[in-house]
Length: 171
Image (cartoon, rainbow, N blue to C red; front, top):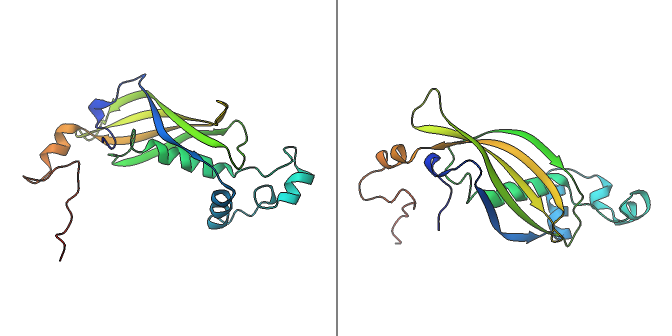
């Protein structure tokens, strides 16, 4: 299975559909909120959400949905990345609720060779997240620095597969 792409493998306009999707549980949402110290009652307090919010139920914290989509895109987009350079924009366009299943897809918007280092390039992408009904819930654009294939192959010791790490022999 391919994990990420070299610069030459990206084509402007290509769309990568990320699989599998992820059903968001209450546990996922609460754990992410607690780990990031986001204790807003809209995410953590069912009574508050029912009585004081327009949705009448807990809303999944948006940064979890962003992180989930970013992670889903790694095998297709940034698995070989040298660096994630920038998140240009991030929009949460519809709420996500416990029990929703999130699916993602990424479109390559642009690519350019590095002006200072000939061994790499910068790829601009847009990732969109949808729930099980096809409603877009999140969209973001980012820039990723990726190596060129020739450079990656030339810096690997003989006998080593650059696509697979070597592991120590068991004792």
